[in-house]
Length: 348
Image 1 (cartoon, one colour):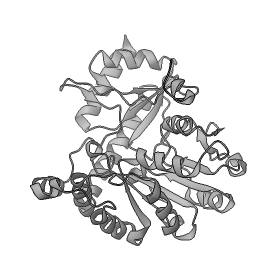
Image 2 (cartoon, rainbow, N blue to C red):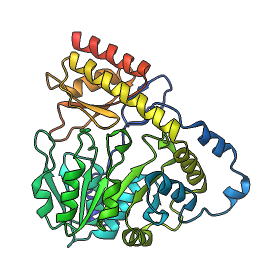
Image 3 (spheres, rainbow, N blue to C red):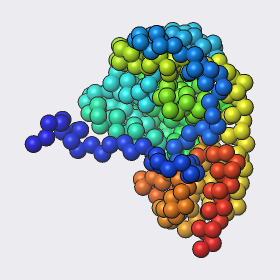
Image 4 (cartoon, helix red, strand yellow):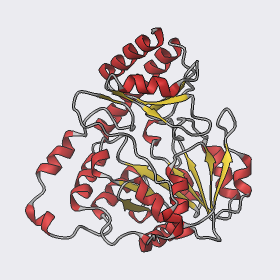
C-alpha cells in the first residue's frame, strides 16, 4: 500500500548532478563558478554574530532586496528572495498552475520543469526548439497559465533575443517566467521587460556568477502585483540569515563579480575553439557551459571514460541530447586537464 498521491508514487524525481566526495577531481558537471566568492562575502560570514543566528531571519530579506534593487535599477518591492532559483520555480508552479492551468516551455530545457509540473499535477505543454534553438512560435498560442523560457537555455547555452521575448510577453495571456539563472554570462538581460509588462517574472541565481551555489540563494524580479502574490506562496522564512548577509555582500561587490565573469567568458571562448579542434560540434554559448556533440555519437562512452579519470562533466540520456555532453567552464588548469583527457580518449 502506498501513502503517496498517485502522481508522487509514479514520479521520476529530478536528478541533480553527481557530487563526488573525493577532493582530487575535476568537477565540471554542475555549472558552478570555478572561482571563489568575493572576499567581502567571507568578511560578512565572519562578522555574523550569535544574536543574528539566534533570531529568525527577516522574512523578506530586505537587506538583500535593497542591494539587488540598486544593482538592477528597480525598486525594492520588485524583488523576492528565494532559497535558490529552484524554489522560485516551485513557487511559480504552486501559484499559477493546477489541473486546469497548464505550464508551457520549449524543449530541450531544464529538466526540473516537467518534474514540478507532475508534482503540481498540472499539464506540461512541451514545444520543441528547431535545430538552431529558435523560440518556437507555437509557444504564444498554448493558452498556458505559466510560460517558461530558460534564457540562456540549459543545457544548450543558446539565447533568445530580447525583442522576441518582448513580443512573446505582449502576446501571452498568462505569465512569462524568464529563467535567467545563467544570464550573468550573457550579453544582455530582460530587466527592462519587467518595467514594461505586468506578466513577466525574471529568475536570477547567486549560484553562478557570484560563486554562491553552496548557500542556495536566488531571487526574482517582477512588478509588485506579481511579487505580492508570490509572497503568499513562499515559506514564512524561506531564506536564512546567513544566506541573506552573504548574498548581499556578494551583490555589493560588483567589481569582483565582473572580474570573475570576464575570466569565465574568456575560458569559454578558448574551450569552444579547442573542443571544435578535437572534432566536437559545439554551438556558441551565452552561459558558463558548452554543449558538445560527439562526432561518433558515443557521448555516454566519453562521459564514462572521463569519470574513470576523475573528471566529471554532464551527460543527459534524453531525446535530442543522447550524443551530447554538457561541459561547465572551469579554471584554465581544470580545462587543460579535461582537454588532455579528451585527446587521449579520442586517440584510443
